[in-house]
Amino acid sequence: MKLGYNEIMITSKYFNDINDFINLEIGIKRFQGNIERFHFNPIPLNEYSRKLFTNIETFHVYEYDDEIFKDGRIFKYVIWYLVNYSEYLQEKEQGNICKNIEYTKKDRKKYGNTIPSEVKSLGYECFIYCYSLTTINIPSSISVLGKCCFYKCSSLTSINIPSTISKIGDGCFYGCSSLISINTPTPINEIGSRCFEYCSSLTSINIPSSVKSLGYHCFYGCSSLTSINIPSSINEIGDDCFNGCSSLNQLIYLHQLYQ
Image 1 (cartoon, rainbow, N blue to C red):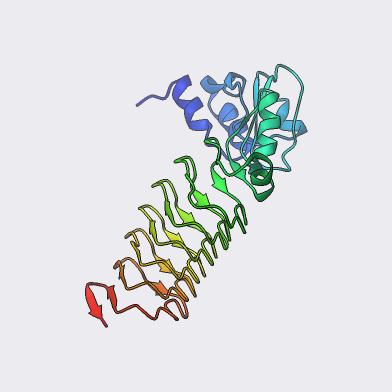
Image 2 (cartoon, rainbow, N blue to C red):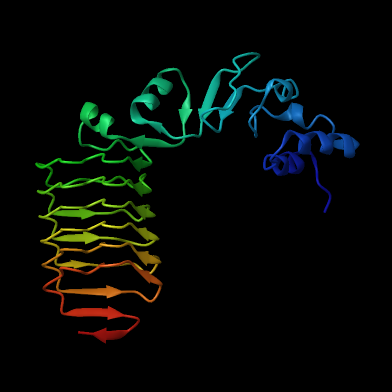
């Protein structure tokens, strides 16, 4: 198969270093001018490498400390590092795009309990001490629930976690004493330590087969929990994971029943 201009440009988008681009143009004569075909920067740029990408119109900012250029024909910026919702709104007003938006505790106090659909993750202590919160809609755009996200939301009775969630942070539902049930779908792969500690009204929970470990004190003090199925995918159960689960009479693990 002979690579053409379009194929080599697509391939070179995944180069990691400016030297890869330079070596391509020096080593294969017919691909000279490949860099000039780019209308965005596929890698972070410095003062030297910026001069090689002469036709950039959209500038991608991959890390917070990347050097930013406002010269030439650049009219829009695409920001890949984590920004809070307030920062996103400011960038949006300027016509820029943010790829990784976090709803923080500060954002929630300013904009309310309704999670905007653009948000990708809920930050540390986002809904902490929201005692009057009874229900919450988590949009399918969310992939991460941060540490202590719903810490001591004592009136929260139920919550549906969308299938886009891959991680539930440490202490996420700590002290949610009114939480009766929770849906934890695939592909969650991490349930953090103390995640459901003192969820004293929790009666049942499904742990999907994608989960590999349960953190320490994960269900500590869940006194209403009567049974739980632990999938065969679990290879680690943290210390005191079920300590204080006084109503627990069935623990199904690896298809074996322990009572």
